[in-house]
Image 1 (cartoon, protein in one colour):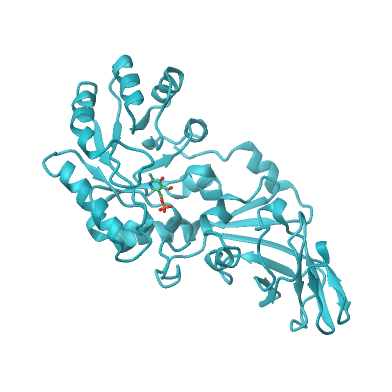
Image 2 (image 1 turned 90 degrees about the vertical axis):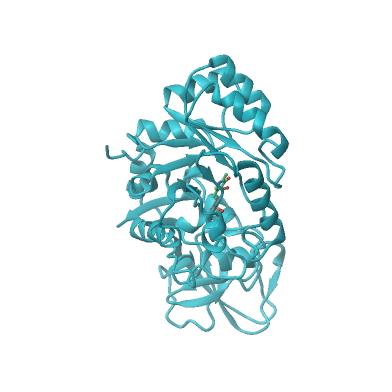
Length: 369
Ligand SMILES: Cc1ncc(COP(=O)(O)O)c(C=O)c1O
């Protein structure tokens, strides 16, 4: 059944004031899913679309990714929004449920649940109703999951409730090529699951791209679907991943300043010569990183313009001295095809996940195919 976009997106699409817009390229999203299939043709794909599909629009992304076998979310509200919109794919709740009410909701929504801790086992035992369960093994990340020594017991208790079980774990360091920690996690997982016949799942995006031995029955790609690189040392472009989000705004003022003039809050930037400074209608209230330093590139009128001075709530300032074409109304791309989000994240001392998930509610979304 086709998925209906939530009403809020329709409202956003009709608003037309100046400000930041997120252009979501759904064909790039599908291309990236095809890349997942290229990397692991034999695995089933559970697309990770939690956190509003990493800031890209939950229901629109789910609709575009109809070739995925299942979706993973973090919160019941996300699963509920997908069901309300008509999504009938298998949905996995990555942190599972923590009380009876949540368990009843999960059952009503026909969700699969991760079981990662003893209190969840007790909940499912008390409810005693068959549903798909993913038993999480803590192979070294020490965040969620049963220690390898406790898996046998947890599994025999789950077996009394359901036959529909997947064994899973999650990597801590798969983004580092050749990481010893990942090798150790793989070996821990195999030592627990080798003699069992249940389907297994290990790989996030980094596991898909860099750890073929981790592909197993189900893969769980997130960031690579959105066109950012899951690896520290290889760019998205080199992996043939296409950026899905372009975050853009426009120039709303231009000033010709003298050497010694300062720009923005704290007078943090001082012009060292005559400089042409542009003001872009985008700031940290849109999700642009507050800590992006001077020099972070912005794509203005088809060229890179360096950010100058502090990022403020609704505006950033850029040096247009070398961009003669720039004028009021010229487009300013904060990240997208011409400016990888990974590069902006690196400038700001963070990761692409953080920037993509951090796009705020006032940004207008436009979905293109
Ligand atoms: C359990 C689990 N699997 C898969 C993913 C997807 O990871 P990535 O976005 O690095 O592909 C996540 C994301 O946090 C996760 O928590």
